[in-house]
Image 1 (cartoon, rainbow, N blue to C red):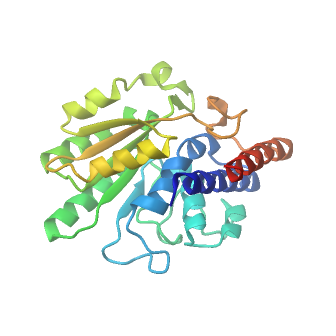
Image 2 (cartoon, helix red, strand yellow):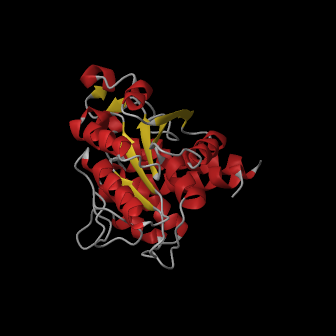
Image 3 (tube, rainbow, N blue to C red):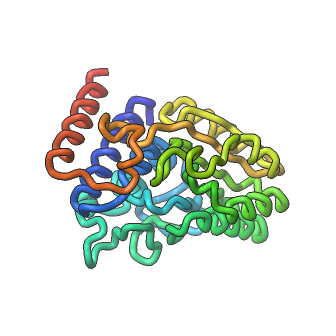
Length: 278
């Protein structure tokens, strides 16, 4: 995909996120929107996957460690063809395969159920170790929130990944600087993030998580690193793409009402039209 095609796709992902959370009347739009660009890049450029064969043995694995941002992951999966986009309106509904947090038993394309913060990276480390142990070629990716770095289990997993030289593991941190109770500094600062991961033996890459050129460069670089795991630390904007949600902690776990939904979709439609003019 070209950069422009990725931008258009990410805008569609954002529309699906807002639609899903509005339909559910609950969910987590802020962190889903901040990660929409990386979800798009992963599922349309980076990952070795096949929507027609979601369980193929050599597929790359992805674990959403910040599982509450499932609407963003589901939106990318739907856009990529793993299931119909119409399913997004069933988010969190009884009987839907789109639960509030990822459930691998029910949703095509999911490699791990997640939600309890800190645990997803541990599962990803286990998958990467398995690939190394059995000589498998797949790579493992996991996305963490920056507030999630306050969990001690994250650093146990990081220490283990480094000790085992898991260079098939790519950790991604969505550094939007906000969590449910406010800024991450106010709650329990994990800064400086790159230096912490470096101390745990990681190769670190810091980028603008909304710039597709930088995303490409970072993931390309990650594949060249041997003998140590990689972390890509993305500076992002919580609620990216919807002006009244941007950099606003109150949208961490709130759903838009009908009026807010209409305003958000109008903004995203206008952004999509502007991209079509390019």
